[in-house]
Image (cartoon, rainbow, N blue to C red):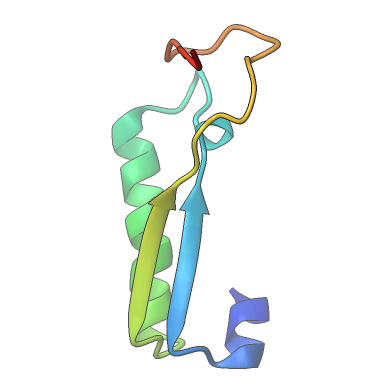
Length: 72
């Protein structure tokens, strides 16, 4: 967040990908962490808008993931 604060942006785009999910982290915990980042950006850094984007798979996973991927 220090990097973001250095630039004082009006809009912050926060890309969230499936590699942000770990086996020992629940979806609820990830949601809470994302909300914390958004809250900090708006409250402390004074970002006007935060856009949270889901990044999709670019290729077949090379290891097992919790969420099946069908790229075809």
